[in-house]
Image 1 (tube, helix red, strand yellow):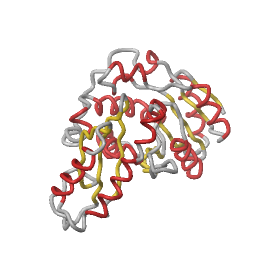
Image 2: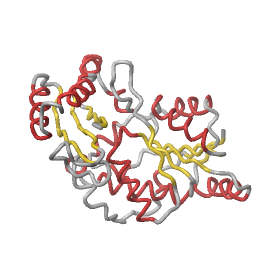
Image 3: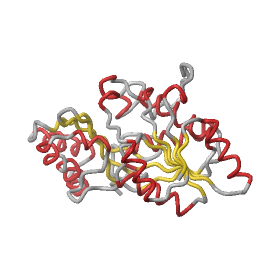
Image 4: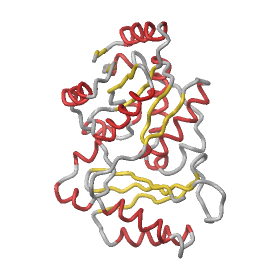
Amino acid sequence: MIVYRTRDDLTGHLNSVRRDKNSIGLVPTMGALHRGHMSLVEKAATENDVVVVSIFVNPTQFNDPGDLESYPRSLDRDLEMLQKLEADLVFVPSIKEMYPEVDDRIYDLDPLDKVMEGIHRKGHFNGVAQIVSKLFLLTLPDRAYFGQKDFQQLVIVRRLKEILNLDIQIVACPIIREKDGLAMSSRNERLTREERKLAPYIYETLKLAREKKEEFSPSELKDWIGKRFDKIPELRLEYFEIVEDKALKSISDWNEGVNKVACLAVQLGRVRLIDNLNFD
C-alpha cells in the first residue's frame, strides 16, 4: 500500500496505471473508517485493478465550524485498516493541497440540494460537489463507490457526474449496520453510552414505518413518525421524508410508479444521525 500526500505524486502514479490499461476504482472518505467504509473498499477491489482511497475531512461541506472541529480523526488506525485490506493507493492530502486558493465554484444542483439535508445544512452539498469534483478530475476513475447511508449525497454525486460530463460509473453500496440496526457512521463514535443505547430506535422506527404504509397515507405516516419520536425527547427529529430516488420529490401517493426511499435526520445529544430505508 502506497500513501500519497500530494496531487502530483498521486497523478504521476495513476498515469502509469492508465498506460498499462488498468482500471481504477475510487473510494472517497473523510476517515474515521469503519466496516461500512471497508465494504466499499472490498467492493472496489473486486471490480478494479487498482483502488484509490482518499482520506480528507473537507472543510467546505461543513456549515458549522464546531462540527468540523469535532469531526473524528484517526489516521493511524485508518491506514492500519486499509493495510489489512491491501488497498493499493491512499491519498491523504492537506487542506492547502486540495484548496491552494479559495474555491468559489457554485454548482447547479437544484432541486436536489433544496430538500432534507439541504434545508438544515446550507451550502453543504455545494461543498461536497467541490471536493468530489476535485477527486474525480484528479483520479479519473472508472468507478467511484459511495454508501447508500448518505442517500441524498449519492443522488447529488450522480448529478455532478452529469454536470462534469465524466465517464465514471457511480456504484451505490448497501448500508452496513451494527447488530442492533444502527447505521454505521464515523459520527457514532461521539455518542455517549446512554445515547448509543437510544440510537437503534431510529432504524426500528424506519422499519415500523414501512409496515405502516399499508394503513397510512404518506402524510399520515409522517404524522405517525413525529408522534413516535415525541415519546423519546432525547431523539429530536429534524425531518422525515418519503421521496422518489431520482429527483428527491416527496411522495404524496403510494401508487406513484417510482422507487420510494424514506429518509430522516435525528439530533441525539451533540450528534446528528441520518438514515434511510427503501420503501419498495
